[in-house]
Image 1 (cartoon, one colour):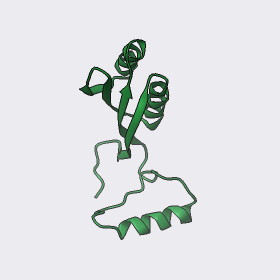
Image 2 (cartoon, one colour):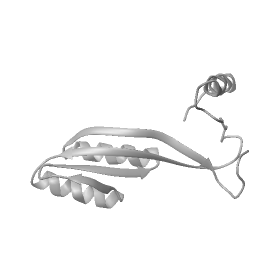
Image 3 (cartoon, helix red, strand yellow):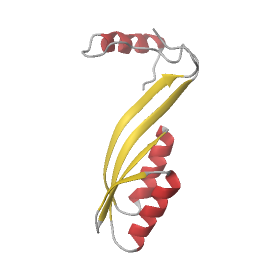
Image 4 (cartoon, helix red, strand yellow):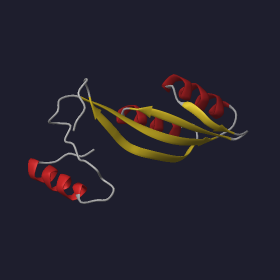
Length: 115
């Protein structure tokens, strides 16, 4: 996902089209509304109250527990960039030690596919 003037966007699109294995570049701002999501993995380390709070926050955000030990959790969260950033900010207070994010994946809304 990126922002810029029309000439900057055109330059980015041209450069992306030359990369391998990029098969197609679509400017979703021209097709109408799009659905956007980001995936993140978050590792939280803590005991006692911090551990309980991490579990409560993960549940509130709908995050999935991928790994749990006696001292740590790894959560998976998929959502908008704003949701992911809020989750990360809150987890920082309860023992966040590592984050891995995919960046935004997007697709045009509606029944038609883009050829």
